[in-house]
Length: 390
Image (cartoon, rainbow, N blue to C red):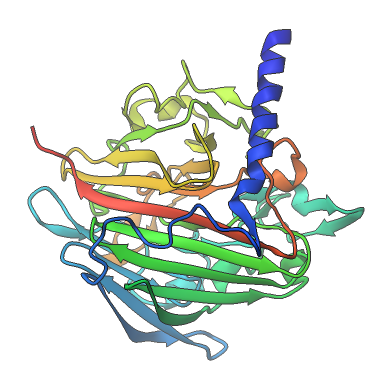
């Protein structure tokens, strides 16, 4: 037992040391590329249209990013990805994310379909953390815990949108100012999220944030993918995750603090790609766990691949983040979605790139703290394609 404890402590110490690498000071350059390499940056287009009005009278716009293969729609409410239309092996196109056909259902309670979540994505134990001798109390909206930013997180506000041109690449930039004390968090946090479509069939999402007080931050996207177009569940999707460890959790899905090996367990998607349903019954409740990504260095790396055998569609995930929450739609309960489809359990999966859950209370995890004078940056890429046919 003693050598294994040393190994775990060394792993945690290494991750903690790397944890600050997703932040830059005002005088440093980021390792994150601002545009995808070797791309024809003029091949995609972005248009907008009115989508509806919130109960408080705020106008919501829907932006459409299009190239010759993929069409992606993102609205200003919650900076939500509402639709991703991609071709299958025969060229037939279908929407491969769960969601709704109109604005109104998004304004009601739903399981974060397509949402940009923050200020802190995932869970914080007991809705509290301590910082510099002060205790901060957050909303508890997931049993005794804080989830995805609280009662009114970034998924429930209207973002300001503008089109920008970055070195020839047209991008949709969403901006939001989270004020000091919002949902219990310290500091005025200025957030920008840039979405753009590359010609390799990839959606790039770049996140930026600055603050005037030290605060925890963990931004991610909560799209539910279904590569068969939502016609059935996702249990036959074959998954590869580049992670040899994960963070075990308690019954409230709060990490226990250690890193466990996936080898020889139902959590192993590293040794070879496995269908989601192959061992899901061995995981109480289904997969909803943070994977500790291998070879994390704050640079953009491929961390997961998914393929659907019938349509041949594929999804590749790249990120600069140290972790990824793999969630298999365990809490979907027949929610009426697009075209009247009832989204039952396991009708979608999420790959939420992130810092680890409950990091504000777990000092051995990679640091989630952002201080004045620093800039939070992370990039995540969802690349859509078709599996080579033999």
